[in-house]
Length: 274
Image (cartoon, rainbow, N blue to C red; front, side, top):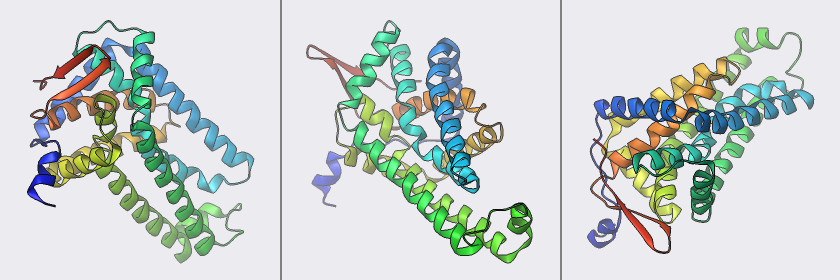
C-alpha cells in the first residue's frame, strides 16, 4: 500500500478496555432511553432464530441447531442497523419516531450495507456447509439417533466433531468480527463502499488487538449465554451490543469527520463522544 493509498483510509483511533466499558454503558443508556425500538428489532431477530431452528427439526436435521445458533451470530451486525439508527437519533438529539428511524434504515440500505450483509450471510452459509461436512464425515449419515449425545461426548468421532467444529467456527467468527466490528455502523453513517468499511474495520482490530479481543470475547460470552436461554436473552443482549457498537464506531473514527447526508440539503458532522 502506497502512502497516498493509506491516506485515503479513515484514521482509526486507539481503543482501550475502559473505552469498551464506556460504550457498553452508553449502549445500556440508549436501550433504556428507547426500549420499544430495541425490543422490536431484537424480537425480529429472535423470532427468525426460532423459525430456523423449528425448520431444522421439521426437516429432521436437529443436529444442525447448535452450529446454526452459533453461526446465526455472524449476521447479528446487520440486525444492528436499527439500533444504530436509534443511537444516532439520540446522540444528535433528533426527534425519535418509527418513521424517522425506518427512513434512516432505508437510506442506509440504499448504500453498501446490503453488500456487507451479503458478505456476512455468505459466511453463515459457508459455516453451515463446514458443519455439515464435519458431521457427516465424522458421525456418518445416520449419526443422529437415540444415542446421539452419548456418541458425541464419549466416542473419538464425536469428540473430534466437537473440537474441529468449534475451532473452525471460532476462526470464521474471528474473521467476520475483524471485517464487521465497525463496518455496519460505518456504512449506516457514511456513504462509503463496503470494501473501505471492511479494511477500516480490520485496521482497527490490528491496531488495537487486545481491546478488540476483549470486545469479541464480551460479544461471544453474552451471545452464548443468550443462546442457552433459547434466544430469549438476545432481547436484552442484542440491543445493548448494537447500541454499544455504534458508540464504539464513533470513538474508533473520531478524528475522521463523520459526514452524514440525511437529505439533499442537510449534512451533519459528527463529533467524538466523551
